[in-house]
Length: 94
Image 1: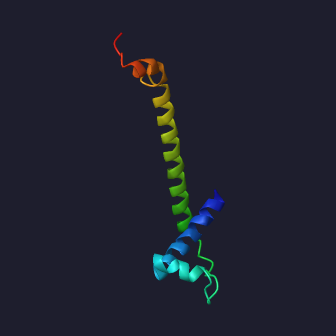
Image 2: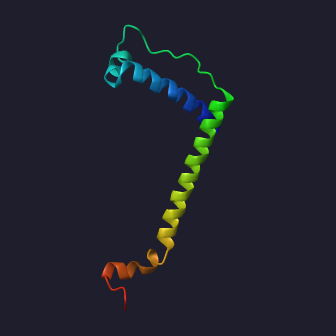
Image 3: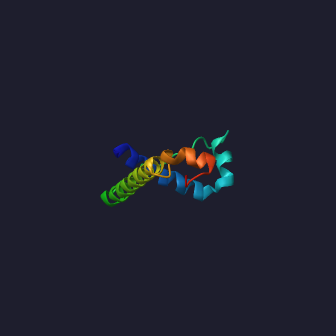
């Protein structure tokens, strides 16, 4: 969890760098650049920023759980595997 928070903060720094040079300039800055590889200062990890990203991660995990529950429900619901033969033959009402 804490590693994911830290990665999010650095992801923001990389996004800012890309916005500064433009997407089309990434290759020139990374491949055989005379300037060398890009360097980034250590970003400030404030409590507010960490809480914001932590809440985002929790929300993403909740969304994943919802999707998994929805998939499980649809698979096991009456219209799922229970009626698979009826779906294949097209005979739903006997």
